[in-house]
Length: 259
Ligand code: ADP
Ligand code: MG
Image 1 (cartoon, rainbow, N blue to C red):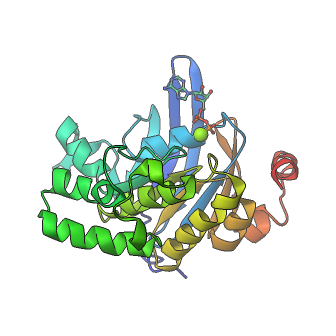
Image 2: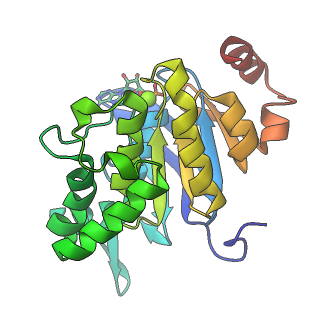
């Protein structure tokens, strides 16, 4: 049982829809992620996985349904009986509570690994540089890159850059980490080192939503696996069931392609 089993979920989606123009990309997503849990989101390209992550992180607005993070409706503030849309500044503050790691590492090329990790705490939170540096050193150690602190991104492999990106996200002490295909852009021999860092985070109790095609990772680390196709969750459950004994033909067809 996870640490948060008796609390309301950290992420809860109820009938969430998202439409771009006339294209309904999310068609009623229901799911819950409890504190300390790892949810792996699988599914073919175009099924709406990134859009869903972007909704959790205030990068897209949902079109219908309800989406809550830490008991608060995403994008809104409650005052008394009424809901108010968050202002831009408030959205930025909310977004800072969630770490996101993308397929592309998006590090600042002119900064060292250490400076990349220090940047947001100093700029967004006003953390003193000495303290931010100390924390960044510890985070680089945690992702196995203590010896690369003074390297620029161009001097690092893709796997190392992605580990710096994870450290950078952790520097904001997020309550939730979102990963959008974090290993898809990596050479195969570099995938393992990034997955190992993610496994360590999961072991330490981080709540994570991970979009990935790494079935082995999902099998080992996920508490729940959701298989998404065409904007709906086709199958949802523990990895042993969804991956080991899928009920739905669409899940089986997908797994036979990625395994
Ligand atoms: P996945 O991550 O599963 O590959 P996405 O969430 O990226 O899927 O995309 C789902 C669908 O939403 C696709 O058809 C894509 O073209 C569409 N889509 C995503 N973002 C936008 C956008 N900003 N404007 C219009 N359509 C979009
Ligand atoms: Mg995507």
